[in-house]
Image (cartoon, rainbow, N blue to C red; front, side, top):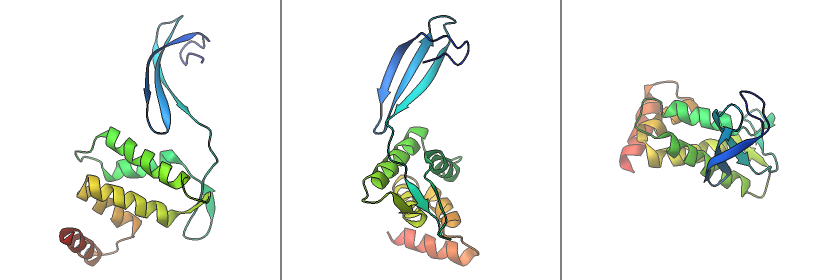
Length: 148
């Protein structure tokens, strides 16, 4: 592993932590002694997302993470919780029998997970995902949420 600061090739691992889909390692360069983080992830078959208009694009974990982070902005939801949600969703998608996943399936998974973590984040995500156009949509979704 090359140091991102000085490009020296020798580093030592200070700490390793495993999650469901990756290993996070804190490293220290043996030359400049600066520390940095790397993530080790198994190379998996690429998932393809089938969008509403039937176009296809590669699944991007970062895009999923960004959408969930946006829904949880300024709410008491820890980044670790969000990472865990993304890990769970990615694992569920990879456990399916196909590499082509409908974007609607991903959206429903996200809403299901957010509903368990934070109701406001759920409503925020649902309003974008389901394309709410007026207050009636919000009211309908809120009444469903209150009944549950």
